[in-house]
Image (cartoon, rainbow over all chains, first blue to last red):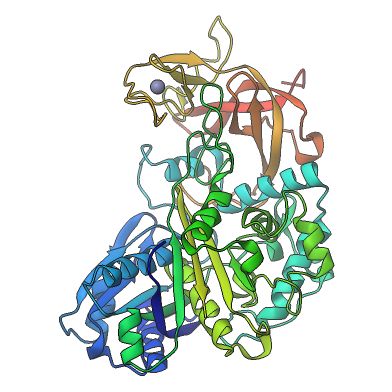
Amino acid sequence: MTDDIAVLGAGMHPWGKWGRRFVEYGVTAARSALSDAQLGWNDVQLVVGADTVRGGYPGHVAGAAFAQALGWQGARVTSVYAACASGAQAINTARAQILAGMADVALVVGADAAPKGFFAPAGGDRPDDPDWLRFRVLGATNPVYFGLYARRRMALYGDTPDDFAQVKVKNAAAGRANPHARYRKAVTAEEVAASPVVADPLRLLDICATSDGAAALVLSSMSFARRHGVDPVRIRAVSTVTPRYPRTTLDLPDFATDSAAVVAPPAIGFRASIAAAAYAEAGTGPADLDLAEVYDLSTALELEWYEDVGLCPAGEGVKLLREGATALGGRIPVNPSGGLASFGEAVPAQAISQVCELTWQLRGQAGGRQVAGARCGLSVNQGLFGHGSAVIAVR
Amino acid sequence: MRTPVVAGWFNADDDPDGFRLLGTRCRMCGSVFFPRADAYCRNPSCAGSELDEVPLSRTGTVWSYTDGRYRPPAPYPGTPDAPWEPYTVVAVELAAERMVVLGQAAPGVTVADLAVGMAVEVVPGVLHQDAERTWTTWHWRPVGGPV
Ligand SMILES: [Zn+2]
């Protein structure tokens, strides 16, 4: 177990399609987080940026871009990239430097200005990049992988397209109450069923959009928080695990799983191992959770996460959904923020925004989407190529 | 000119031993890799760096399947303005290798023709044809299905 760090401030720029530079969104989120922490930018000793990447090329090295925009003041800087897990890596990097005594107060920022349509790799002829190759050889967009998982669940567990639609209905209902969400209206199962198929069996409203947005956190040592006179939300664990060989779940951007013919597969798969590492570090388990923010890139994938984070056994995700356990007011609300279904993905900001939601929920500041009496929350996601990411926050 | 979309991932479609996907096998631990690993073994308990080419099983069973209803972005080949023909993608479980391998389904095979667990075989296919080249690839199709 590691020591806790404090979350002093959380801030976001609303998700949407705003047509401006990502740095602008990041500055809005950073200033909002600093104001929430009742600290000034000059109090920050470390700025960590989750990089904004276009097609595999880190053209915007985020840490310094945000530091310049906020005004050079000499703070240490770190920039990290781990695709969808970039935000969690940024939080963990800040945490490590705080726990090592290198900085007392850190600002973590992620922001994106997303292109229209499918995510696509950078141009050129780059056959040494598996992410380029999957588009070249298979035309395998991200929704193609989501469609494969969804169909597999239907065959294995009897999930139906209507079950998947109910995930969207649930998350849209929660997102309505979130001022930072991009989509803030109720969605019916009929509307999901009437939207066009993108990758059978998934329809447009089963799949998360790509968005502009930004999220920021002000993190500090517990001793600084005490001197600052607050009883803060604490980050108790951050999981950043890689898969174990042989990885037997097909994953983006792979053409194949590892072979399990010579080496037996690990007892639990990659997604489950992400949460397991966080539970182990925090000394908690799924029964301790009051809420979870999971990476619902598709509706069907949210059900997979229920099982992987241990809310129910494999194959029973739909049962939990149908019981209403994961809706607001249920036993263990999942994605009370509205999830990616209500936000769309702003890659480097997304894992940070999950922790913003945990913070507001644990403080009791989540308004119409508040989970009553929340004391412990989990956020979890997964970045391309095998970047695990999970955060456990407590109050 | 017929050009494989990726060199070394499958053999020539007129190979006397039949059309196969090509992987590699580590000389030290026997682990099989597809796409091929030629420089190092990825088994964490093996330091092998010599791998031999090995054909993968010709047949397998459907692990899952889906389709692409919208044109994927570049570098997927094709003319952006041409009408879009959805393609089917199949994930196939190979029993001997204990692995799942993706591929497009043969032309004409739709999601309605597939079911999880169904037997499929690998067949030579064409990804794209332009003025100079025919880009070849591999396809999966139900065993005994029409060519
Ligand atoms: Zn080996």
